[in-house]
Image (cartoon, rainbow, N blue to C red; front, side):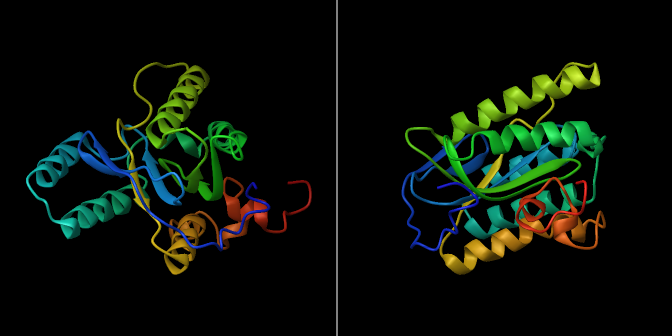
Length: 208
């Protein structure tokens, strides 16, 4: 089932921790995950370096959650060039994401913000989360740099992921994703922001 069919009301289960780089990752085949990708300049390098040092020096789950929260808040401030304000780029990123829904993964929610992307998805078949993210970032970075007439790193090297524990957590994560543009002051209602699942699931305005 794809986004239009799968409301994900089944019992969620978790298995398969692994780690890559400085962020902990979860890659359970049958679990929904909340994933965030940031653009390369969405958080200053000195801030990333400080957070990396803090994370590597601590085994505390709570500290890792705090660091993730700081990153999210920083991104919501719209730091950096935020090239995804360009509707052509945002549309390209969204189309690339939706294209693999039902094959590599099953999407439940997403939003393409000016300097980051949130998605709620469950991977499919033998596709690993790291391979999915690498492919997505590679395709979109090449297209974005071509549209911008530039070269270099487009996405931050790593990504954040967090597995969904239960239904309550699932719907909380979905609300967080789809109301992100409202909290950022981009629109008044989630369904007004066309680079999101809220717009796809809501009633679209005429000629949209």
